Length: 409
Image 1 (cartoon, rainbow, N blue to C red):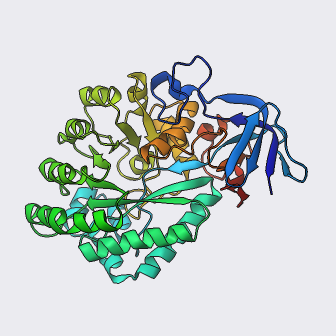
Image 2: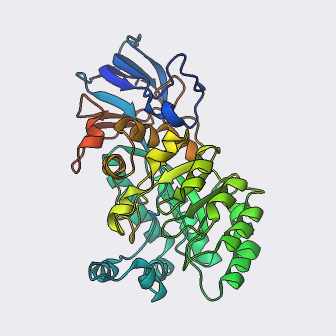
Image 3: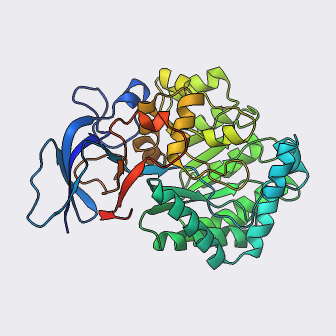
């Protein structure tokens, strides 16, 4: 049955006429991140899983289901473009250590952190991992997230990494939204890094190429994790078949950001410790900066300078980094509020960062905007002013979630 949403304040995210920004889907840059393409009082018609029409008035067929928004904000469904939401076990003991002042990198060196989750993931079945992920996806959907990227990376063996990717694929089939897998092949390591990285390139990467040919390949460049040299060697091989993404500059600027730009990485994520000149270079590149303010809140109060990247004309996305250790956060509304407070974004820029720009990070051109032909993933807020998303903290601002043309909340 067609769905007709009327009397809404619509954030289309489509560029305004004469904005100079391309009208086709893609990341918004610089000052264009503040352009939400607002229709102050409008209507949207959904047919099947697509948007059929949008404007101040649209013609709806007889028998269409009607939702009266009563002037509230209607916007694209949230896209969470960086998560580690597939895991087993918990990290509560580690959390107690952190509260007692033990630094995260020290916990990692003692075999905690990622390694404790690796043990739990290896012990879990594919079915159990998929069930855990589905529970978290349900929490995300209730707060308006309709597309979620989920990384592997807690397996560290070919068998366990493939189990994770299959679990992520399995969970996608049982959820009304879209799950986008990412092969995080360079997360932690066991034994000697050089030997481990050679194994990943020789054994693990070919298995991913064979079974998951369309996924992005990711790595975590940091002290105690993968080196710049190891990441570059992996990406040089992976980019022949896959887009590449990279975690970098979370605690230390090791020189990976210039390499990521040289390799045309789709995104550079974290950026808390990035140098000013590197951020300027990022802003002038096609690589999208992904900031993760939930991590900053949870691990040391250090935040990426997203506002500076935007001021330099760059493109920024915001994501939860949902994971059991450094960001136990599943709420996009919460990270919007954090990005406004701590990363230098305005509320409008943050909205762009979790819709059209986050979709661009994932290479998805059919969502993140309210326009004819786009996937019918929409969120109706309780609010009549979208700036409330950046102002409020806690609670759920979402009244109704439409996913694939169906009301799911």
